[in-house]
Length: 269
Image (cartoon, rainbow, N blue to C red; front, side, top):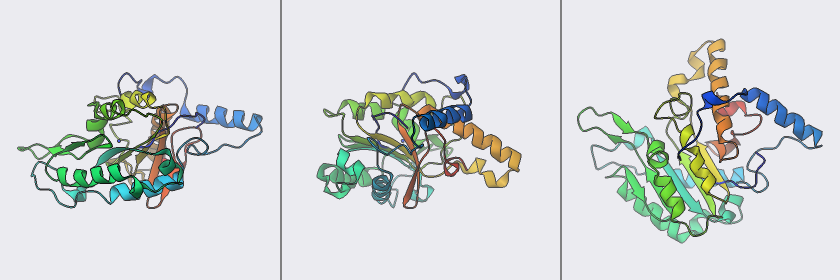
């Protein structure tokens, strides 16, 4: 991804991917051809002025370790569901790997408070971070709103951005909810694509991180033709992140760039 501004870490007025007039494969091919014409190679977003993937993997691991282990409210999803979204503001050095997250004292204090609050409530807000877990209906025990939707569509992330005096810091948005079903493949009121413009308000490095793809569309259970069809839709959806926020898939201790140019297979399968 070739733009100078990016932020880490899951508003309004974005386009649906159905409005694109170019297939993502065509966009990727044109960008790769241009890079070769310039005498360079296609590089991962996150290099240069962006977020370092190795540093990002460490950040994600530490954020995941702060998940609440128990839920004291029947209306809060159990921790085993791993449905969780968080956005944090850290120094650029943390996102570059030259500083350690645990040395960000105000953030670590907020993370400890968050762990306790999310045992009882579905939303936590502070100057350093915002986080959400699913809230469930008292009567039907169904999820009312996904965590990433709570932070993006409900403008909670935007409030965090507005509260920052220094918007050149690093922003990381992480979702542990199964990603890319109705939130990115369908033009619905649950789609996150229309909320991505909020990231353009941030001038520093920024990243949107997901962990796993929606299991209902697990490509292992479909025929090869169906697998490719779903993967193509995901690639097209992920093109919307370009020029707004770097997109990464972080699994175990490895983070892969997903949002611009030739999208890696690990991001869509």
